[in-house]
Amino acid sequence: MTGRPIENEAERDIFMAHRVIAVLGNGIAGDQAALAARKTNPDAKVVMLTREPHPLYSACVLGDYICGEIPRSTVFLRSVEDYTKAGIELLLSSTVASWSPEDRLLHFDGEDLSYDRLILATGSQPFIPPIPGVDKKGIFALKTFDDAEGLRLSQGRSAVVVGAGPVGLEAAVAFRRMGWSVALVELMDRVLPRMLDTPLSDSVKKQFQGMGISVFLGERVEEISGGERVEAVRTDQRTLPADVVVLVIGMRPRIELAREAGLALGPAGGIHTDEHMETDLPDVWACGDCAESKDLVSGANGLYMLWNNAKVQGYTAGANAAGSRKRYPGSLNVTTVKLFDRAVASAGVPAADFPEGETRVLHRKDLDGEI
Image (tube, rainbow, N blue to C red; front, side, top):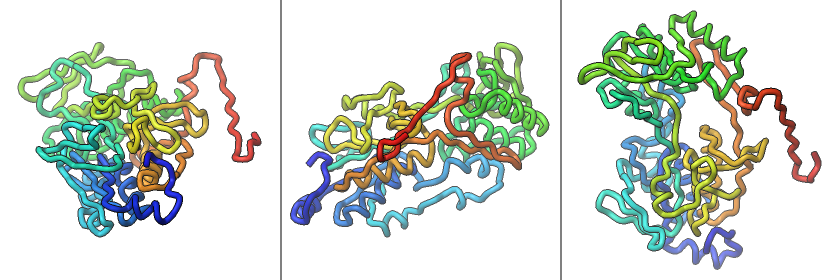
């Protein structure tokens, strides 16, 4: 069987017998995939493997945790016991070193897991540029709970945040709330460049400056200096003192296993999937930050690394791996960021990303073919 729906009870019984559905990754996509698989076929064995030492948590609130606005318990959305009760075998701190698609085997920590169907929910990883000095102590990304824990326990008084996207702004807010001196450095000409056009971006910049955060736009980081620990960040225009540096320049899909196995990749560098979240290998699905999908409005294929997109993709992949035939409707580029006492939200692509003078009109047909 390679992804088609189960048509009758006899066939379902055959499918259920000793079937193993493996889910690789325990972010929101993997979480929803595992739960959907168990709900669709309660008799299937569902195993979720993750390199994370923690069960599911919300990356959206890590900034609030860093500055003490919320306790540790609020960050976590699931416990190990939750998965046990749901009938899901959760293997934490399990790094899959290699994958043998032809044998349907995952090799991890000296062990092998044989599966019948596989869901790749491997997520994304921070892009760390090859800046001189980037390996010094005191330099962090902000992707995982352990990143946030390291930042929360950091000692000092000056923080430099490199990257003015949503995560970068949240990191800057967190350190400012702790009373640190904060500088925000961005290569592009505005803050939240993937969310906002210039007028709204200027408004956010002024709010940050009013809260005591220095904002430097259009500057390139050339070196991180210091001894064993970071002491300063040198851009092409100035030198900024730094006890801590947070690099939040962007995310890349985690596709090493997919590439080694020869899975087809899409134009944005993620795993290619169809409307059912299936890959080009039989009995293999992909979802979340590692998977490409179509934009619900424009129809453009790409990476839409947002929580709600990953959640729906995970549910779709999990249900289909367990014998259903769900269809993923498409991704929505909707982002919300909390900044001090205000929230900033956007939908779609900023007008600044279109060539000057170009406008685009999109028509979307409804289910009856009407515009």
